[in-house]
Length: 533
Ligand code: NOJ
Ligand code: CA
Image (cartoon, rainbow, N blue to C red; front, side, top):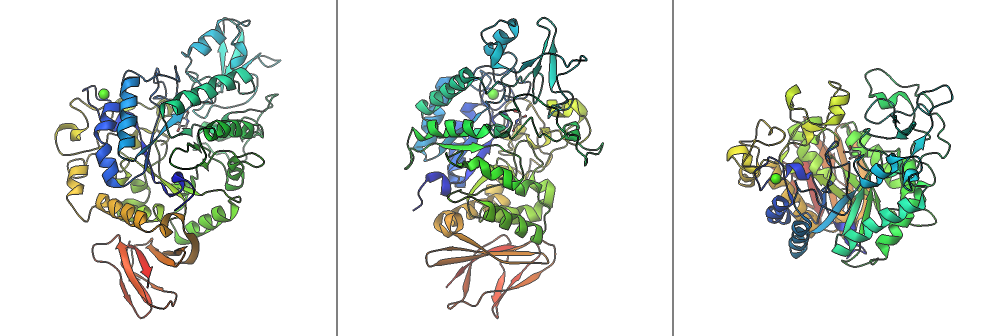
C-alpha cells in the first residue's frame, strides 16, 4: 500500500513511569507496558515509543542516562525488555526507544573518567573549557533549564558544558570515539529487534567549534524562561549536526530500507519550519521524521491552523514524509489547551492530517494537566524555575485504568497524583461509553486504517473561514472531506459539487452533522469525516 510501514503508522508515546506499575513501588514498569499491550492493540495504534528506560540516577527522569545498553531496575531487566518486545511484535506493534545522545548522566562511567583528570583518555569525550580570560564561565550560554550552561569543576580547574541540568553533561560529538560508541548503542538495540528511535534534542548535538557568545534575544521578557535571554545561534542547529543524522540513518538503513523490518529514526527538534526541513537530509538522508511540533504551539483558530498546515506541506522537501504531534511529556496537554469539546476535534485533526501522527498517552482519555501541589513537585525543570508554569509533572501523571484504588495504575501511592476526575475519566469507564473521547479515538483509528486516503492520501485545503477548517484527502478514486468546527457555535459548510453526493463516515458528535442542499451543518465543536459518492 505504502512504501514504508512508518508512513501509515500511528505512534503512541508511553511515559513509562506513569503507564502501569506491577510491583507496587508507585512507578510504572516494563511488565506494566506488556500487561497493557492488548489495550494498545485494541485502540488501534501501530507503534509505541517509550521514553527512556535505561539505568539512570533520574535527575531528569531517565533523560540522564548512566548506561545506554541496560534497563533501569525500576523498570525491569533486559529479559523483561526482550519479553515486552516479543509480545509487542506478536501483536503487530512496533517498538521505538528514546535515544539520548546529546548528553549522559554525570554518573555515566564515561563522564566519571572524563572528569577524573585533564589527562584522562575520555577528557575529550565531553566539552571542557578554561574560564573566560577575566574569569567566570567560558561564554554566555544558558541552560535550557535556567542558569549558566557551564559547571565549574574545582579539582581539574575547568568548566564543562550542559545544555540541560548540571547532572547532564553534553558529549563532544566532534570526537569520533564518541560517535563510534553511540553508534554501537544503536546497533545494540537494533540487533535486539527494536524498530527505531526517537532521538532526544537532535538539533543540540553539535555546538559552534569556537564557542562564541550567543546573541542577546531582543524579544526576551522576564516572564519567559531564563533560556530565552539569548538566541541559541551557536549552541544549537549547527550545520555539522546533519552529518550525525546521516550517519545514524546509514546505520538504521543497514538493517533494511523497506518492508516490515525497516528501522525508523525520529528527531526531536524544536525549530522554525524552514530550519526543521534540513533534518530530512540533503545530499545524504537524515532522519525519517523530524518531529513537527507546530500543532503544540498553534493558536486554536481555523485560519492559523490552515496557514501552518500549508506552510509545512509547502516546505517539505521532495520525498520528505510529514508528521504531526499534539502533545508530549514536555508540553501542556491538548485537553487543557483547548478544552474537552475541542480535544475531540483535535483528535480528528491529528488523525486525518497527511503523515504520521504521534499520540501522547492519556490524550485518548482527554486527560488534562493535573495541578501539582508544591510538596508533590518532582520535575527538575519546575524546581529550578518554580511557579512560572514550565513544570512538566502536570502532563506526566499516571494513566487511570479503572475506578479501583489508585485507578488500577499501582497497588501503592503513585509517584505523581492522579487526575482528580479519575473515577470517571479512566479507561474502563470510557470504554463502556460509546460517546467517550476514548471510543472516538478507537473509531478514528479504525476509519483511518480502513481509508488509506486519510493517512497517505493527498491533502487539499478547502476552507478556513470563521471557525471552520475543512480539507480533502484524496487517494486514487477515493475522496474524503474532513470538516472541523473549532468554535462553540453551529456552522454551515458548502460542499464541493461532486457526483454522487456525500455520506458521513464519522462525527465527533453524538448526533452527527446533517448534509442537505450541498452543505453540511456542523454542530458546535463538531468535526466530521465525509466520504464522497
Ligand atoms: C527533551 C526531552 O523531551 C525532555 O524531557 C528532557 O528533559 C530534555 N530533552 C533533556 O534530555
Ligand atoms: Ca513498578
